[in-house]
Length: 182
Length: 268
Image 1: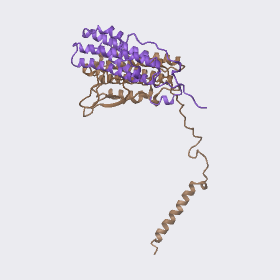
Image 2: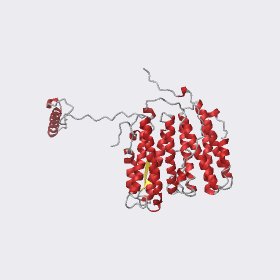
Image 3: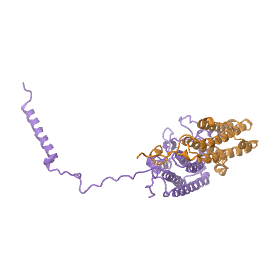
Image 4: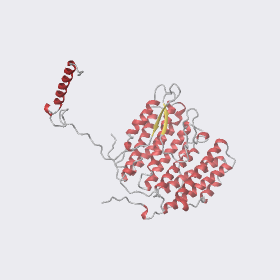
């Protein structure tokens, strides 16, 4: 729908993140770094090898890329600190391949839920676009853990997870109204 | 010395006279009436003008709802016509679940649409059906197609990706952040469906990420095609293989301005 915005007579949201957006994206960056660190821990555990290890490493690298992309969106506001709460909740569940799968699937679902709640608060369109493209991949990665090594449909489609997203109110001037000269 | 013969002179003068008479018969001298309906009886009906379509949140959500019905109809056809045969018959429960999910999405979307003051849309997107789904169904149900059931799964996989990309794509067009979140929640269901189907079509750990078919040079179906959700044309290869063993390739895209479900579009 490439021309949709051009034909739509409505208020124009800002492209750049607002101050409230930056706080929300700081949080998103923290959970992405935590997810990356959890995948690295799993990959380094020696419990995975070959193609399975390559998949675990790829998923972890995706989260690293997301943290860097968010860094690019918020610049100096980025803290580059992992979310310790998310990390500590799951790091103890990486003891076996089976528990690791459950843990990593929960992490992906938690990130998808959290980022969706953040998307529902963002005013800036640039960040919304990036976050939307991240969320769909996190949902895919969660589903993969329900399809391998064998398909469990209920697990693959399970999206139950609690969002960790904070609620940060936007300043009233965040949206720029389109005006028509008279 | 003049080189024009008497015969040439007669020919030229004859043409001149004929031409003058012809032109005169085409002009006012021939009694032509000054009317816009010279060549027709009665009054021609002026061409109907399409209503002006304004793209807004309601139109985007109605379009998304129409895609849900495309998926519902396709899954229903697969189930009712027994297209999932052989080893793919085990997917019947999954397909029923996916259809139920799409019905739930359509209901949720229409709830949002009505809440925004719009009119619910409860049928498939006719253009998407006409240019993508029906041609694919025709190809894959050909009597000499040895991979009909697999091709049905491939079509379903492509449609799930079209739906997911549509939701992801409209995020930047929807005016309200809460609507963007609602759209991406549904997109998550669509990509989960797509992953299940991708693993059926090209399973295993090595096929989770992007890979390339060495014979064709084209991308293989992947559960996670890349680090970011793509917004690109979705390839679909179905039908009876030709002499070289190649199937017909189609390219599916998300709805554009000519396939949006504007306010004035209704189910026939």
